[in-house]
Image (cartoon, rainbow, N blue to C red; front, side, top):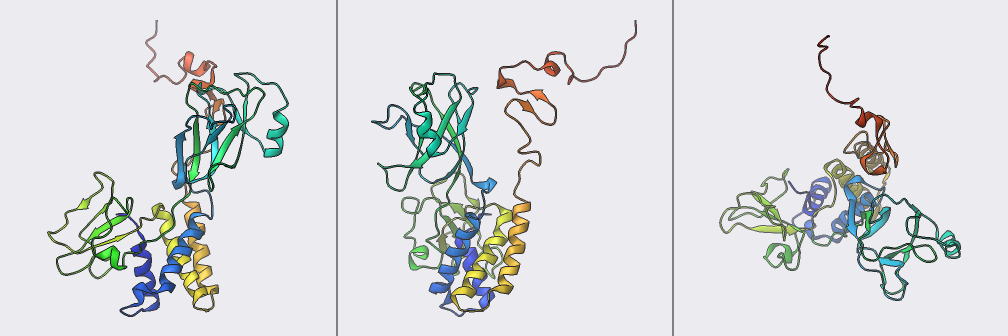
Length: 310
């Protein structure tokens, strides 16, 4: 199942007991938009981790500046072409100081991030050094956390239900199929969808849509399953604010949901326990560290065999 904006609107409609026209009410749309935004920006969620190859250096920067991908929220690490050279982030002030010190290929690569003067709204990565220790003939990788797009299509607008939204103008949105005489609702609705797919994504269709079924398109929520309750309660908080009501009760529930979401925000419980050279807790060398591993060389981790005697 794909979580989408329609699920938030349906939840708010059930929460406030809305009438026939409340599904298009500005309050519900704004509450969904703001509640979703608050959750996805509340922390550096594991779900939003991504990576990309840096393109060619920007012209006029002495091969030292790279335009970061659109939608980058924060940089996690820079990986050099040889995969072994260390990298370290520095502030802009430190970057300016490093420009006065000699550097050579193979040294630790120091870099900073700044807003791009040539591309409004974009970030660029600058590598320090004089001259810059940049191998322009090979690819640099950057790991980062992406910035989710804001919600726009909520699933109840006219364009969302008349077939106007397709893979060409709403790529990445969720299209749900109902039946011949009913529009699709969420999984907890009275008339749940019969099938759904992500527009523009191959092999994303789940279920079998009936012929000539009514459809609804809404933006996909860029969240993991454990974040969904926090999004719903966050929308409740904003709905209460927009209506001028007391938000303390809704905020208490939202803080509880946020705490549970943050506690569940992991894929591997041992994540974050490795150093640059040693694997923890085993204490052995990682393959690309350039150092041999005694445990590996001597077979300490080989399967044990029976003692055959003399």
